[in-house]
Length: 336
Image 1 (cartoon, helix red, strand yellow):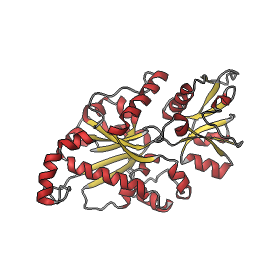
Image 2 (cartoon, helix red, strand yellow; image 1 turned 180 degrees about the vertical axis):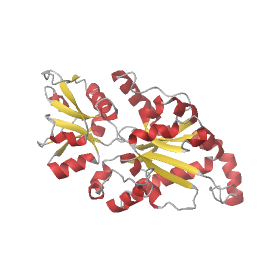
Image 3 (cartoon, one colour; image 1 turned 120 degrees about the vertical axis):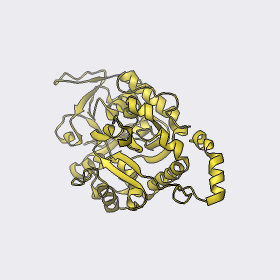
Image 4 (cartoon, one colour; image 1 turned 135 degrees about the vertical axis):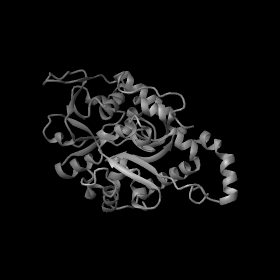
């Protein structure tokens, strides 16, 4: 972001001298009418604090939609119908030609929420991950981010793996992966351990006696996990409203801090008040949103300038597993 905001430096300085404030309303510009979309679940947690403080007359409308509908919010032929800002999975953003043509990435907002659980207590680390060889691991969304990430971790540790299909025979010299229909399938699937996402991890630990036995973020390496859900903004919007976007980013950062003290009830209320489907409710459950669970959701804003390298590395790893799983973004997608 350093580069884009340096572009606005002279402008901001002039405006700052006249107004002392970043907001379009206070600087004499017309009030903005901004739409912000995000998928339900962990990505919605990233902006929950902003939704909690949302005011009717602030010019910003937040919409929480079903995860499988988020791509539609940036893909209308009529660009005016598309979200001004949108939270979406990194690999989905770079694969979508309309996103590549019309949006830039401000940064990541979640940085990994995948964990291994099992009935038997254990702890899988980089030192003993190879002990999974010959065992069976149930994997949520085996062909999407959870499965791609776990396969990436295994590849990084030079551990062979295979996918078991149609009740195939487990290989003795590889980690055997089986697909999970959803997180609740851990109670009916025969496997030594499972890879699922928070907050479903906490649900299974609480209700069905599972133990957290591995942290994919730690196994992946690095202190910040990996860019999972990212925040994109329309190019023409940021070009016209750079100061407003800078202020918005500050609110995103504060929203992550708000989670540290917010109750589960406050979080769920904030999200339910901004559902795209006004008759629905969030998949998040207040009793599960304890500090430990929220910390494991990886909510933190990391600017594009700071996560660009990690994002490209992750996308390349995904494409090494499945060339169609991701793409390398166009020049300028990451806002430096």
